[in-house]
Length: 155
Image (cartoon, helix red, strand yellow):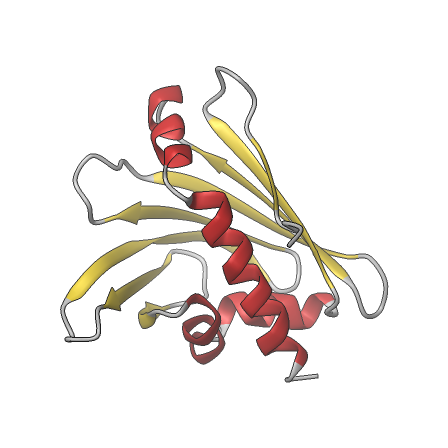
């Protein structure tokens, strides 16, 4: 299967650029990132908090089948403009992973298609490279495939 979510990671840089085109209007793509019930479904995680406002905060957690929390991430929303952008921090609760800064830009391509451009800035090149050693790109592509499927049903 072709990976529609593209991850560009230049050598020696502290950032990565993620791009993905969706067969969704930009309003629906933005909604998939800001409505807790939709986020929970496509990310496969519990949305503990999602305050979609300037200086709001968010927290997600994932549990195993026995109910043990195995992943927690949280951050602050620094800026949000509906259907245009979200600027937020992201930090996993796991030791050794520093906070990262994410710039999500939502772009209408046509009335029924849109594009997500996501620039992630890390504390260091080493931190970025550590993230890239995880199955990051594969997981993100799978999540975006679920987002496309789930949000398409909402049209």
